[in-house]
Image (cartoon, rainbow, N blue to C red):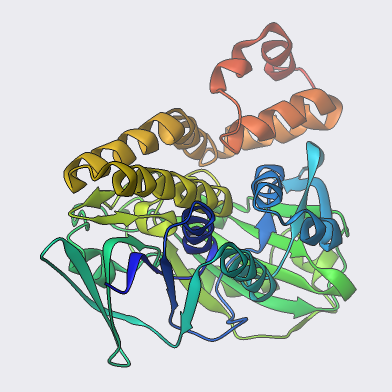
Length: 393
């Protein structure tokens, strides 16, 4: 047997699983299709929660050196804008730097990394999972963790695809140079033609920024993400203010997102899905790094218990699915509520208008819309007073 566990995919979710498995003594093979520092389509933003999770994995020094973010600049559909601030700082880190840092942690814990090992096929026999890579390599283990992103073929091959549910959202982004935007604030712009969705400008060092658009999939026709992106860059609330002298420095790339723990069965027959493969991204804003790191840890805990006790793999799968529901159920319900709210121009216009006058209201609302706090908080006397007609006008 090659290992106790094979982890397919060395992004945040796969590295998290490999780190927590190897740290507890499991023999782990971490398979990655690309080489070190491979560019991946992502917004590159790390929330305060993501920063805390990275520090728990021993990356405190890394977190201290990245580009700090203190809050957001939010544009409403009518063009009004407001600033909001998070209780703890977040950060901007390109995935070509984040992923190698996580891989180093997994390797330091004892995992073995195989690059150039793109997933091709998976089968099960004699109490093992056998994984074949595109290069012809074959690996066997007692369990496998699927961290291959929003790859329907990989989920289907593992028997975990829920064909009734497709990606919850799509994002398209490119890097720009010469961007004139706040250094410590990420920018969200809810231009009317982007709803239900938004555009963003996320600042990096040296006048660079990650610029993109996100669109939620609601089954209401073709998204035309390419057209939305081009219009956002050329004719939006922020284009004249921030992008007038900017230059696109990379090709625009598009990627799907599975959100709200939908589109995957989670686990079955010795295989557990994590990160985007299990739909761990937040439906309201597409944030995926915290969910990736948490699902990786939960999968590791379930597998470690199975290895320790020799439990039936079906019991391990059930334990992991329960952990997912317990950890994310309430959060995903909040985020689905927030996603619906973010699709209404009237709500967004009043939210921003009132938030310009009352910073506490603005900050609290943003935490709710990000899925961090319960929507019930909006029923507090202070919030209700702040959102009443005439308030903040």
